[in-house]
Amino acid sequence: MKCIIVDDDLNCIKALAGIIKDYLPKIEIVGTAANIKEAVKLINANHLDIVFLDVEIQTETGFDLFKYISAPNFEVIFTTAHEKYALKAIKSSCFDFLLKPIEIQELVNTINRLEMQKGAAADIGKRTNVLLDNLSSHSKKVEKLAIPTKDGMMFINVKDIMYLEGDAKYTTLHLYNKERYVSSKNIGEFEELLDAETFFRCHRSWIINLNSIVKYLKNDNRVLLSDDTLIDVSTRKKDEFLKLFNRI
View 1 (cartoon, helix red, strand yellow):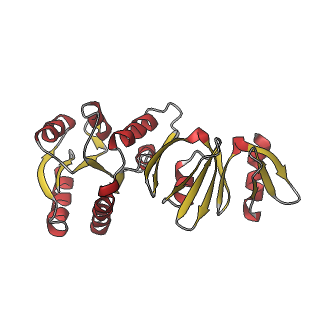
View 2 (cartoon, rainbow, N blue to C red):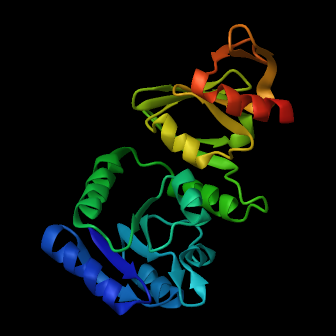
View 3 (tube, helix red, strand yellow):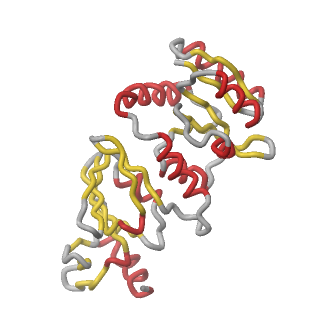
């Protein structure tokens, strides 16, 4: 596997390169870049499997790379020292990321996961579009999701989701058009991604789109959704839910 490292901090490049050489000898580092222009030259000159891409590079961002590489045929692993909105956009598009300082086991796990998914990798170009759309959202909310499923990857508009049903390590997304998709992400991961003003985790197993609620059944402590689905509201979530319900 061939890779490049794109980062404007030489110490970060050395640290990541050292981990790769010591713990991931199957990966060959063919070059490093301190800015996007240098990165584009390396990408065009090499057939790459992975680009390690810093999120903040001098006056640019790592996302500026996609202005020049519109249809990447390599995996991108973002590296960053900051937990900002950008991380939600990265997660929503199913790209991997590593928080600095990079931990050895986190990097090894990420590479192993990429290798396992390689045979059924989703369209990287479509995931890139999801990433860029969410980054450009004026609302600063995740509006699109790339969903890993057993058959590959589905691309869904968040507004089309009526509710989510969690079951251990998996989550079923129920859409308004009656379609259902089972994702390998757990429901907690979706809770982090979705806008809390629109989606509410009313129970450990359920997240509901507040716009889909038809009625709150006080005696049963359940909500009736527009498709006639009844969903429990947990006792500990009741007060918080009623505040949101009264608002809408």
